[in-house]
Length: 349
Image (cartoon, rainbow, N blue to C red; front, side, top):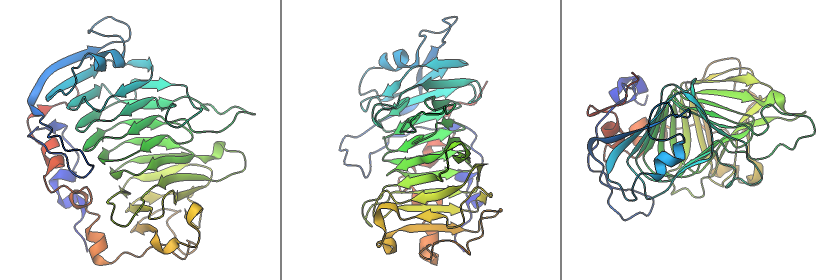
């Protein structure tokens, strides 16, 4: 057996305590050295009512941070519904974005048309920490009759070494664009019906609740993932240890957006919303031998694999070992351990 997640203190329930060392960019072609100095240098407060804090919008707070910042800056977002599109540009690393709780702090916007322009929240730099915020694309919510179902992205994650604790991602189609980079999600709520976790990220979704809303679709099945791994040399893929897949309608666990698409559910509670065949080769019918779709020790009414596609992957011992969090996230420089240690405390008040 490969090491179980609970045996590693890094992947126990986070204490929301972080230390920042000097970090180095890794595998995404960025040559610049990023240095995030220890401790929080400044806290910026955002309040939509203007009752406290420096800014009424989240974007205004981000805009106030100088480019190429190397000091950890916390943006504390007071409870409220912030109707805006928010972008953290690539030249602004070392940001902590903190809401009070995902149930009371929401950033939302109603856009669609194109994937790249419909995004409510986009983060592009390395070293971004987010806690206690819901990101929503309100288009098609609620779904109205005679309305096109199209891409409407709640969040796009494009930087390396980003972490999300107890956040929400809410949409219908293309909710969470896990674009590229290494990302760790803990205890997050992710909702959607069609390809609602997609992209080419190298990401670990621990103890996350995936709420399927395929029951809203007119006479069609839904899809949870559309992972876009392009070659066997790429480290990208989505791993879902524990957590739950629930909701309404019927849904595939994933379909292949890339020729080497890789998605694994590990000890996940799969309810009856999971369609019996489980997976779809989509654009790559006839090339299924290159896809890596696996289910390990899952439970629940939807976990029976007897009717799954014949090409469902059976992992050998070495492959299973490679799914252990720090190994899968290429954590040789212990970036995640640093982000979870004892210097920066962003626990809720």
